[in-house]
Length: 85
Image 1: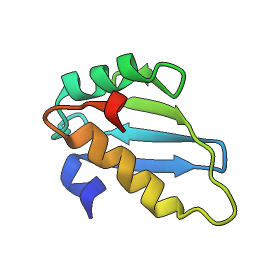
Image 2: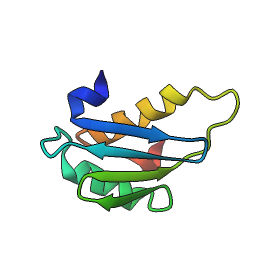
Image 3: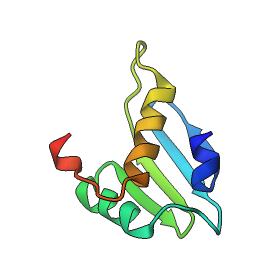
Image 4: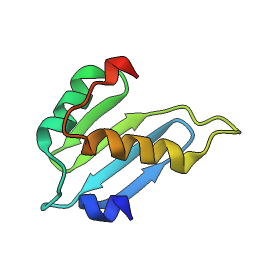
């Protein structure tokens, strides 16, 4: 639901990495994505104008959907302060 509202067309993930593809008319502010990448450059990388790649570790007991949801919330926030998390 949240992904659709944000204008995300595709979510792909495995135990170690993931990819988020945005539509051309995404509702996410570009500055939020840029700030996320600047704050965590080892974790997030903009592959193209419409694709954000990320590295993650999903353990056996981790909730995959919670991890994805957390990332979506981060890129949707008006003000990101990843350093405090």
